[in-house]
Amino acid sequence: MSSLANNYNRRKIAFKKGKGSFLYSINGNRYLDFVQGIAVNSLGHSNSYLTKKLIKQAKKVWHVSNAFQIPEGEKLAKRLTKKTFADKVIFQNSGAEATEVAIKIARRYFYSIGKPKKNRILCIKNSFHGRTLATIFASGSKKMTEGFLPKVEGFDHFEFGDHKGLKKAITNKTAAIMVETIMGEGGIKVIPDWCLRDLRKICNKRKILLILDEVQCGIGRTGKFFAFDYSGVKPDIVPIAKGIGGGFPIGAVLMNKKAASSMIAGTHGSTFGGNPLAMSVGNAVLDQIFKKGFLKNVQKVSKYFHNELNKIKNEYPKLIKEVRGVGLLIGLQLFHDQTKFIQKLIDNKLLTIRAAENTIRILPPLTVTKKEIDLAIKIIKKVCKEYRV
Ligand SMILES: *Cc1c(COP(=O)(O)O)cnc(C)c1O
Image (cartoon, rainbow, N blue to C red; front, side, top):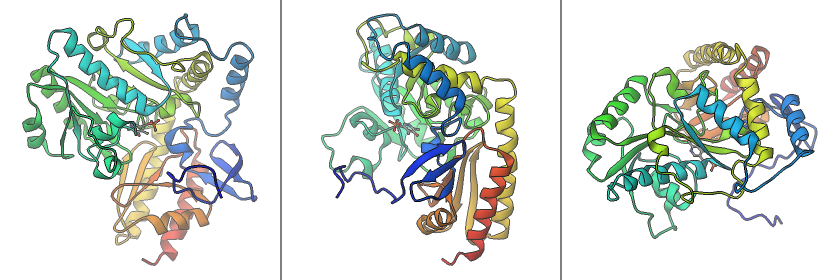
């Protein structure tokens, strides 16, 4: 019997190694891994460049306290601010921490300008911002919060797509609107660009902050550095995590000057956040993603993937409801529960993962090749052909 707690329903597969888009199980099977740790291994498994940079740093210094300067972190923050809307960065270790710090920053900003009662965060009902106490109540999900009362106060909710409900839910106590640019766990639900632009306008008009959670959809996943880059919108605060570490645990909050202004010494801290080892890996990930043509290639291969998936959808219109997502953040929505379909894909050596609304999440590494996409398409076609509801 396992000594690990039972908070996960784990599949009975373990891996001995990974390379690029593939994972090799201990019993000798090769899997095409289109989960990649849930959009974490942006450059695939055991990327040789990342490994080289990790080992190089490991031989120098792993960890020092944030009581000292950390040049690797200075460098990563500088690169992130140079390429994006942001002026300042705080490093963390995970997505939940990053979103929770985003909430702290929003509250602290209004506190610092003499409006401490402006402290509520408006979120989408059944969204996902992590699993800490605050972030589960931010999600407004009954399932995630069950058994974890008392409620962490300060969150209000509106339904995805309910523009009237959103406007009604904003009060003079609202400090920020926080949404995932693309809802990952929620079923790869994309907020259209025009809605993002509207959100920005609403936030400007009501003088509140806009937080876009890019923990899953950011760092090149959609073919742009941020998913919101397609809309031209500039948010105030952006938590990131998953893809930035390429498999090493890193979280971060990017923010503009205004949002950063209240985060003076002593307002936030993290023992591990931004340590030299993590920062070196983060820099190595950016070395690759910022390479000329890298994101263009993500756009190109993902367009091909979406086209092929839509062809399958047209061939099986009673099985597949919708191909969702942007770039390599892809959702295949079925008309019924997706559990069996995912198992069939695994039986055929393709790994995918579920999301809400009967959706199968397909998350290849950003380095995926056309040949690997063709292999996935072949497997998905085979499963569709043999599938009986
Ligand atoms: C995964 C995720 C988080 C939480 O990240 P953890 O590293 O698991 O804490 C937060 N927001 C979004 C949108 C995510 O997809």
